[in-house]
Image (spheres, rainbow, N blue to C red):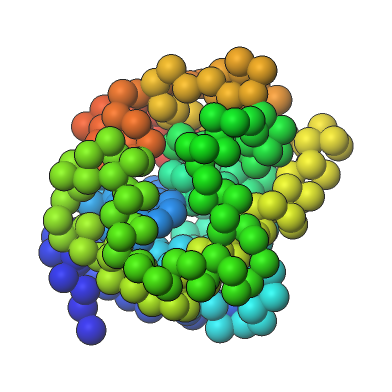
Length: 302
């Protein structure tokens, strides 16, 4: 059944793509070089509604629900279903199934963590990486202090063993998602009503909320271990990287996003944008401007 929020993506086709582990719900439109857009917590693919239609005028745009989020369902083993390495593998398979052997990946929030894992593990496929409001997971944990714990409390709560967070979230899902989105956006009224309802409907599902918890559990375990192995070995992202961060955001030790990403990528540029955490919705015009300029500089990405 078509989701009402699909009306926010005029001209896009709603498709199902089955990979070895995931049955993806994905929107596609446009022609030309491929761009994969990955949303974050606690949202769905609808987070890209202000940006995807503009990009589709010049590019082949692919907008899935992350594995376990929205209407995408993990069909393989549920063990480590939140692993970003596993999500990246499934998304790479999805892109190949759609005929895209090479692509630019743009990831926000949790999607940003999948995006940089894609760039690390599938170097031959990822032309460029755009990371939105994200620095790698080890630096997040290493810089975690009182302010982070109070502000991003869901990192800690959702990572607790099942069924603790699932039980707490089930008490009043609509209260929790509205509280979370209002904090991330600064004002929940900045979120399009149709997109907001799409997020709420997905969050109503016990299965989706469990997948979100598994995402954060992986972030506190296997994802951190995978990232540390790469960092300790000196492995770096070879593709060009654009970082769009929250304006003025500093991490542990007063490090800027550029300071951190310079340790992870061969070529990186960074710009802070106003609008808080939900930049794809609160600063879409600024993001589009930066994206188009960056994409225009990518060799053979025209």
